[in-house]
Length: 123
Image (cartoon, rainbow, N blue to C red; front, side, top):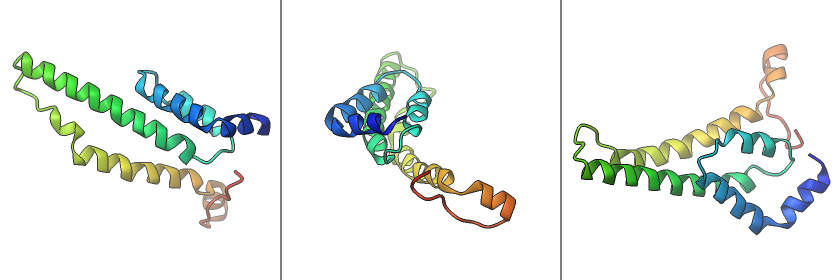
């Protein structure tokens, strides 16, 4: 993506963040959003914060709605409310930095030169 596109996106931060939240609220798969965002040189937090706010809201809604419907239908064989608990939130908060760190490793240096280093921010 060109620098001009990055400037347009950065110039409309409120609109862009709102669109990321709306996208995260939709049932569309998120991998396309992250692939497209990866083609820019913008910081990941510009996408991650609104995206995870949207996903937490949408997943929380659907789990709560399904749990309420299950209770109404008297489906006692499965406890669904535990998925919105502390374990779920903590696992997401811990795994996202791990994935980010995985993408910052200079894998060429690690495999070919057997040395560990991180990529600079320009990659």
